[in-house]
Length: 257
Length: 226
Image (cartoon, rainbow over all chains, first blue to last red; front, side, top):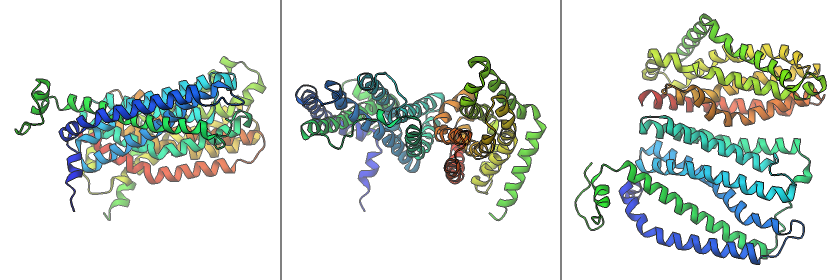
């Protein structure tokens, strides 16, 4: 069958030129969604009966928590594709995703602490979810540190791909064990009020925020990947042309290695 | 491929012989375990009730750190003298040679740790009901940690300063083992049953037995070729 599209995906140049047209649209969707959901959630959604206004952290905390977990899987899957099909681009996506994921987990922890202060009375509790995200941030750190430790780029790519795959197997186990550890150690009164009973007027802005955060994440991941592409392909002709201001699109000449 | 069992045995015997010839290297993690655990009462005070309460966690964390300390040696000398390359180009599956090396490594470092732990338990006034749990959980736990740690050792063997890096990339992966291991000892100290925790540790070990040598083999190929 026609597998050309798949192999073309592996070409950094194709990706770079293709995403030129995506970026404005993604930017529009992301900012539109973030502004709509953010203003709706922070200013117009009704106040919570027990937590008052402090529950509004949910509109930032929960979407980032979703995305930071998804980011690890994107990183690991990209690494696996790179290892299996020996393509250049997935490794660049993987490298771009690691610091992004780390930043996201840090944001989850910070917003969680901000939310914890009024609800639980302290900045930090060893809550099951917070602890899992702490460990997740350590996993991201491991991949970043390993990536930077190698002189040779190919080795660094493959090594961190293997590490992120090993981490993928571990994530569900870590998540479950921390959850179990938490229920054993902490009284149940600290648990968050159940979210399934959330009112629609609170739920809609949250859904918009989750959607917009995913789009925003995609946008940043693409931008990070693009700068990684330029860094790695800086010796190829098309990047040189791009830097010199020559239009790469209408140019028929083949890129020299 | 028919010679794989004999390759497994000869790698295993060679590694064990080497380990016993370097007794100093073998003793270092044990001495670390001993000294580090002795520092805890000096830091938190000699009250028996307090020590009794924190003993399971302390013993487990220190055993984990002692394991991390010795991980760097797992492939280092073989990498330096070229034995690793010979293993890589041999026609036998790398899974079994990795398994043999990890098994020999565990017998030389993990098992002595398990045998030493009751003594340290006495020093931290661990209740006598918890000693069996301590030994059994460490037995399963150190084996699983050796297997998972081998992946980290294989990933960093090509780097000159791999020592600290191994700890950074491997420690988060040890979290489930630490949680269930320490919890088994805590449950036993309170006089409760601890078979659930041991079962989970066994499950982690089984999973590690299946997957970790595969990842280690892949990591060795990357490290040696790169």
